[in-house]
Image (cartoon, rainbow, N blue to C red; front, side):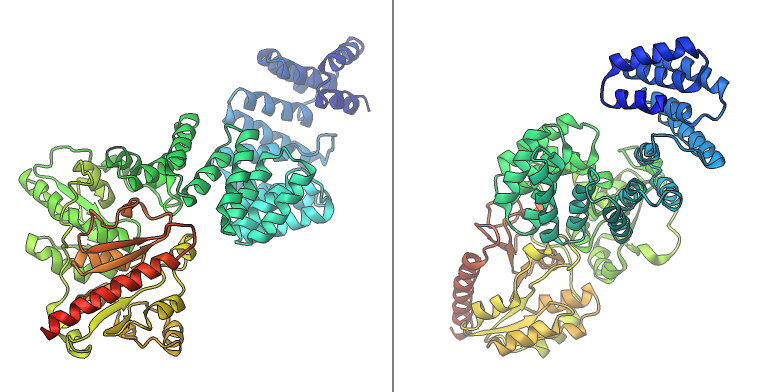
Length: 604
């Protein structure tokens, strides 16, 4: 067929021969819709968009609803950045093709439409259309691949896997299929399979940058950061401006504690993608962990679009966001955000903002998570502040609002001016007394243990520690009574006891942070990994030893053994990736010294 042969020339990049053949065709049949459409395609590829549109108008005047011309209209509009008109032309082509059940050589143009819809924030619409495409043309791999990609973008990983599997059955050599499957297996936490698929792609196409990115991600998940960096570096050479390649390099460099290179790479990426909030958030985390609060807190404002945990949280009433306006006669609503650790860390700023609001002649309303409400109510009462739980019902009327995590920026906070590092939360005195009555006498050092943070956190496997390592480290330390503060892990307590470490488990009596605060306040020391307990210990002023992996949460900064956020904390850091042994050795030595000191105080 003449149309298909000339379209093949264009696809192969042979525009000169194609143009000559089209000219010959048009001289014989000047009103042929196919010849006009192919002529317009060459015009588009040569940047003659106005001529292309005029020629396509001619083609559609000859054959209204001619699918190739409608598709070419969409491509011409899309090339010029006209996403809305392009989507409308694609929709008309789809309707025309379904109405006539027509076919033409370019079977896969709906994939371009799905991509455009995804870029326009209409991915669900694209998924629905892709599903119909699979029903009507399901014997080919491309529709299933397109459906899988749309599902993958929406986080519907099982649906994506099913669609990709159908595509693999039909055409295992379909371009991008194995690479996308590798990325999907990374998302499904099957790094071994992701690694195998990425290597399969690389063996056939060593210059495939996406495959190298997927391989880097797999190595990182397999806890091989050196290999991850090699793969990421190769991806960056192949695609120097590819966000995911540079992002993979940053991730590997952080695990290898090459912080200067990580920040330099992040800043380079920000220059390439100045409007990308995910990149801005990456820069913020690196600046903050290095103690650069002046710049880091500014970039921290990108968290609502840049943080993976907050990416799907709708921005709350941006038109009422307080930007420092006069508060005389106004109500400022301060609200808690993110997780419990953030709530415990940032509540210290509520008295400061309350003082400012009062001085301005305004009123403060403060909402917090229900899980910390009793603790916060007691602690803020001395300032005349009455917090309300988020789930208490309708919000109080307000004129302006500010999320609590933005207060450090608004106060111009630096590492040297963090307020109340000595502690600011008050446990229930009666409950503390009750716990002290239940626990062992003061002769022995009373130590609380936490070995895992939220099991859903992506870094928890690296932040947490095997409780059996606690047992091995502490079993020989005399003069200590250990208490588990790890909620919902009774089995580990039993295993530690069987390994020779007597651990009491009072956690069945802990129903809230207020209960935990009272128990912790009755202890002499808390030993924990990076979790909300560390923030609670510091906010209560309880001596707390915090174990940190090589890539810590930004609050804990780098290298130092203390924290400007909490004066009662002592930090024990990994020096090498994944290696807790030196940390535990130092912890054991420190605990022996602390125990001996405690014994002297209670026998002298």
